[in-house]
Image 1 (tube, rainbow, N blue to C red):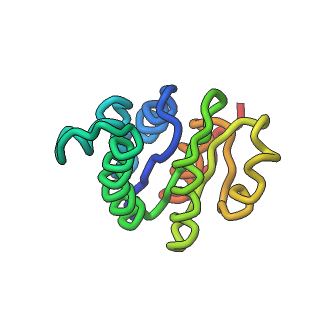
Image 2 (cartoon, one colour):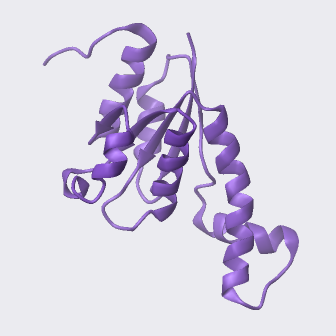
Length: 151
């Protein structure tokens, strides 16, 4: 068995790298959004031309990023959506909703401080984790049936 896993959400910490490193040796292909913030914000104007109005600048970028995100989520077996402590990730909420609407296995990743605010998103998820290592343990269990060693 193999998995295609889309890693969505917060881009300011190393959670993606921790999951990918922890899943080494498992048959998992990871995809995700462009995590270079400037490239993601400016892709529309870099490809389609400049915009004097910031609204249209952002609009072009959002549309191009949506193509990548929709494709990644549609092709994923599992979608992991991370909500970080520092920023409001409205796009992550959209991605979680899209994954749920497509019937994708959704894992939500956030700290305890977001439990109340994300209760509806958590209710749509098949698992809610607080640490990237828990996501790795879920993926390992799904692929191999192995439980983590108790320490």
